[in-house]
Image (cartoon, rainbow, N blue to C red):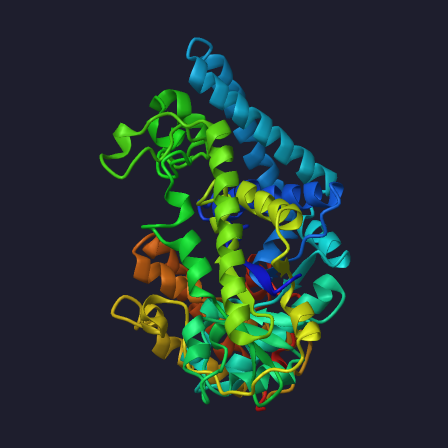
Length: 529
């Protein structure tokens, strides 16, 4: 008898990294790596499960910037070229290592992998979004939305119109893409502030995800902790992250991805091959970069990258199956224990960044595949579910007011507001004020209409939480600073042109080509609520 539910939720997001003004920008490879290592492997897993008659259920956010990039012809063409280079390099590696049997074996593994990626890419006509939509249409995948550009909502709450724009533009973009309104939303960085649920309800959303402590410190305290959702006073449900299942995957100390037999992420052929040999496959300026071919396993915690042993995907796959069984066993015990205490079916909500599976943890898609197969065949304790389906099955839940929270460092807003990134917020706030001011205008002609809409795009792009996050992590900081400044500068340029009624049509056209997200946006979304 089924005693409870397990909801696996993946957050698929990347910032809008599209640069038609340049032949090569390294950050576009964030998208290309995610397609090769995460999104297409997940599609392969889903296809295999369907083929074998396993009625799997998984929830996945697909953020508007990611969807926009995946559907962009320029980036699709550039991914074609990126993948062709990977295929060429892997083939060269097979030939070059004819007398090194283990590395040749690994090179052949990559040749087969990239060939399969190419087949899936072309079978879906290069349209990864429509490929995922097919699984939504069969009710195996529940796709949810996020903030329009992943803006950190609690840090813009003094401008409710700015928060509303992040939510409403995302919902409209989702409906344009998937043909129906979204049921749920992954709050950017799972960041919640009190009152946000009213806007979510007004946008037609039924539920949102937040970190566990946002539920645990709700008022009144939820009787069942994070193992049942709560209803806010607006009727929108809040689901909290389960700490136990999250730790088994995320933790750098005890998490599965740290197993010694798994592939080492930080040891890449792009940094290790002879320079003249690898030069055609690194950056055009000759700087080395990761190319995505990695020959070593994690090996152990001691020593440096030079001490790593060679990887073997056979044994890594076996370990992924073992870890999937362990995860299933632990969920069975957890749900049995919770059901005995709660006397009702608990739900364990396990949310992760999608890019963990495949990009950071190479074996992650295998783990998901085994988990669904084992959950389907080897246990009857829990049922895997979508969050919307759970609300249908269990419509009676406690009404509470969630607590302000995020899933960042220390659980609140510190990661996105600190000494590394605090300088951006006065500029973002001033831009929000000015956008609200512009939203009251009625355009005199088509040119001013376009300028008003482009101003709203530039503000949304400047608000992406990714830029503050990158500044805090200390990686690719110049890029994050440049992106923040460039979007704000474009916004200010548009603001002054609109106010003077002197819009530069040539300059506007160039900016529209560069920042072409949300083609159907209406700047009036910033009008007072």
